[in-house]
Image (tube, rainbow over all chains, first blue to last red; front, side, top):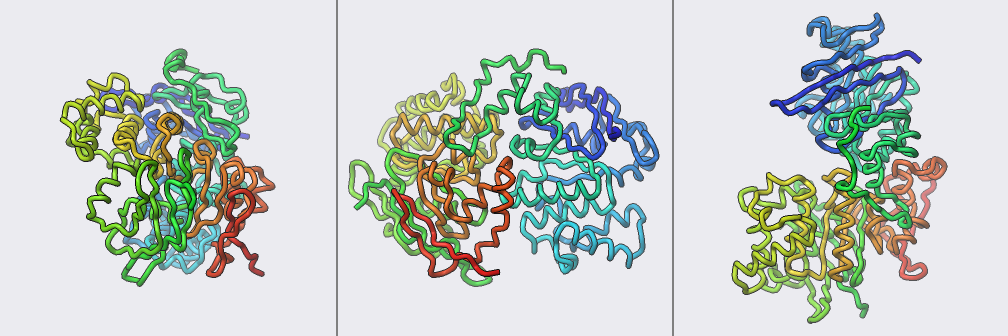
Length: 276
Length: 308
C-alpha cells in the first residue's frame, strides 16, 4: 500500500492562540484514518489546513498525486486546482452545505464545470450515473435540496464530492447530524464506495462508536496535539494516553449491565507527555 | 388506578399546516412511575418531543390534541393537565414547579443578558413567596449540588463565560430548584461532547436518586438509554412501538423497529445487523394495530409482516 498523504509539523494559530500544535501523520492509500477529540481539540482546523481551506502557519503537507508527490502549501492556487480534483470534502450539515436555489443537477454539475470536464450532454450522463451510485432516483436531478430528507441530502453531498473521481475524501463529521438508522445507511454507502473506487478517507468524528466501526487507524487529538495514534484495535483495546482512556470511558454502552463509569478529568495527567 | 406520577392516555396531536392536517402523535399511552427514569427513544419525527411538550402544554396554536395527561403528585390531588386552560394559574404553578424541563441546547435555554445567579433565583421567586436574598442563597446551594464549584462567584457571571457542560449544569439547577416531582429532559446531552455527556448523565441519575423524583428522558441514543433509564418507551412515527424495562427492551427486543434501531447502532453485531437492516418505513404498522400486553408490565405493538 502506498502513501497518499504526509503531514509534518503542521501548526495553526488564531489570534495568538495555538489551535493545531505541530501535528504529523501519514495516510496510506485506500485506508480510513479517524480523527477524534472533543470540540476545540483542533480536528476541523487540522483538516482545513491540510486542504488549504485555511492557510497554516508552518509545516508541510505532501500529497502523492497521480503525477507524483506535491507540497500542497508551496503551490499557487492555479497549480493547486488540478489537485483539488483529487481531494474532496463531505461536510457535516446536509442542510447548510447545499445551495437551496440550485437543483441537484446544477449542484452536481458545478464541480465538473469548474474543472472543465465534458460537455453538457456528457455531464448530464455523469450526474445520472453518480445519482445511481449513491442510490438516489434519477428523477432527483431536477429537484431542489428542500425536497429531500437529511439522509438523502447527505447522499447528494457525497455525490458532489465523488463526481470528480477523487482519491482522498475528507469527511468532517459527515454522519453526526443524522439519525442512527440513517447514519448506518450512509456509513454502509461510504464503505461500499471505498471498496468500489479505492477511496482514502480522512474521517473527522466525535462519536467514538462510529470511528471504531468505520476506521482502520485513529488519531486522538487533545488541545491541538495528537496524543495518541494507532490502529482501531490498539486504541480501543489498549489505550496508552490518559486522554484516550477518558474518551473511551465516556462512551455509553447499549448494554444496561455495563455501567457508565467516566474517569474523572481532574485526576488525569492530561497535559503531561503531550507529544507522541 | 395505578400509582404512577404521570399517565398519558390516548394522546393524539395533529398540526394544521398548509398541506392539511399532519398527525404527529396517534393514541400514545404510557406511564411514568414514581422515583425512576423513563426514557422515550426514537428518531427525528417519531413524536418524542411533541409528547414532552404536550405534558407542559407547550404546543403551538396550530396543534389540536385529544386524549388525557394526568399528573398524580405525591401529596396532592391528581391534575388532568389536558383539561386545564393554558393560562390557568394551576398550569403556571405546574410549569417549573411540579414539572420542569431541561432542553437540548443550553445556550438558547439561558438568557444571554442576565447573570447566572439571577436566572436560577428567578425560578424560586416565581413560585414561592420569598425574599430575593433567600432565593439567591437557594440558587447558590442548588448550583453547588449540580457540581459548579465556587458557585457564589460563578453566579455573577454570564452564560457566554461558561462552557457547554457548565451551561447545561446551570439549566439543570434551574429546573430542579423548585423541587419538581417530574423532570423532563429533552435530549439534554445531544449537543455535548461525549465526555461531558457522561458527566451530565451521571449527574442526572445521581440527583434523581437523591431527590427521589421522576425523570422523563427524551433521546435518540440507545447507549444513553441503557445508561440512564429504568423503563423505556420506543416511539416511531407518532406511535408507541414497545414499552418495557430497560433490560427487557434492550436485551430482548420484541418489536422489529426496536431491533432495527439496535442494529443501526455503530458496533452492532454484523449478523444481527444484516437480519434487521431492512425496516421498510413501518408499512406494516397501520391503523388497527394495537399494543399487546406481554409479560410483566411489558407492551409491544402488534406487528404484521407484509408480504413483499
